[in-house]
Length: 409
Image (cartoon, rainbow, N blue to C red; front, top):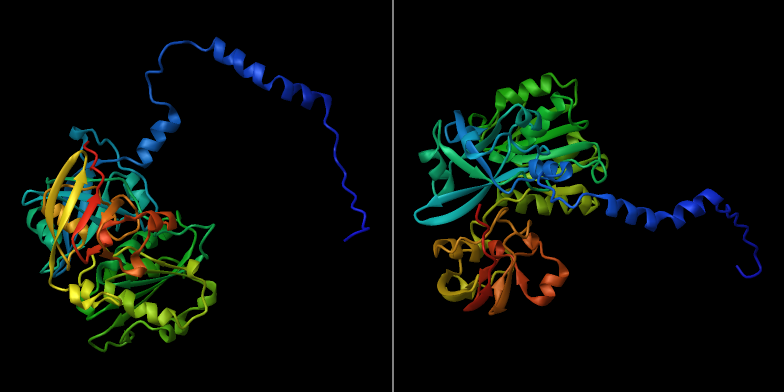
C-alpha cells in the first residue's frame, strides 16, 4: 500500500564473489585453449547412459513361452547379443515396448505393456503378455510365429503410465480389464521387490474366474506385501463367493478405498474406458489424478460420439508425400490413416498407436479427418497449423498429407 515502508536487507557482495564473477569468462577461455585439439573418439558417460536408457532399437530373442489362460500367453524376451543388444533398457513399471513386425509385405508396429518388473530387466529379461484376439492382425501373428528362439525387434521403453511422486498420490487405484492387468503386475512386483514405495489397490474386471490372468500370482503378491497390495476381482458373467459381481463402478470403488486420497490408473479395452468415463465423471476429482493407458487401435470408430454416419463404409483417396516421394493410396473411412499407410507398404513411424506419443505426427494439407476427442493428444499449435496424428485420424474425404519417414537402423 502507498506510504508503507518495506525493509529489504541486501547482503553486500563479498570481494571474493566479485573476483570469481570477473574471472569467469577468462577462466573458461584458458581452459578451452589448454584442451587438446584431438577429436573425442569415445562416447561420453552421459551420452552412454542416455543410449542405455533410451535405445532406438532393441534386438531380442524369445526365451520362453508360457500359457496363462486359454487365449493368453506370456513371452520371456532376452537380449540378442549377436545383434549388438548386450543388455536391456531399464524402465518404470507401467511402461510399454513398441514392437516392429514384417507381415504380408507391410511393416507395422504394436505396443505391449511390460508385465515383468524393472529389476528383472536388470537380470536380463522382459516379459510381455499377449491376449489372442480372434480377429486380431498382430496377436494372431505372435501366437502363430513366436516360439523359443524367435528373433524380435522393439524400441526402448516408453509411455507415461507410471507412478511419479511429483504428480501422483502414494495410493494408486489400478482399474484393469482383461490383459490390461499387465502394467499392474509390473507395479505389484516392484512393490514386493521394494523398488516402488506406494500402496496399490487393483480392481480387476473379468467375465469369468477362469479368464483371470495371473490369478495365483496376484494372490501371492497380495499375501506377501504386508497390506501394500490389494486385489478386488469383479466378475461380469458369474457369481463367485468373495468376488464382486457386475461392473466396476464408483460405488464399488468407494466400498474399498478413499478416492480423495488416491490416484486412479486405468488400463483395459475401449469399452471399459467408455464406461469409466461416465462413472468417474460423477466424482469431483482433478483430472491429473486420473491416468489412462493408451489402448492401441480404435476398433470401431463408427460407435464413437461425433462420428459422421454418412462417412461409414466409404473409401477415399489419399495423396501422400514422404521423403521426396508422392504416392496416392486408398484410405478406408473405418480405419485410421496409419493403417492405410501401412497397408500401402509405406512404413510410417509409429509407437503408441493411440494419439499420445506424437511419433507419427504429420501435416494435413488438404481434406478433413475425424479425430476422437478423448485421444486427441495434439498440442494447440499443431491443431492450429494442421498437424495430425494418423494413428487416431480417420478420413472423411479425399486427403493430401505429408508423412515423416521411418528411421532405419
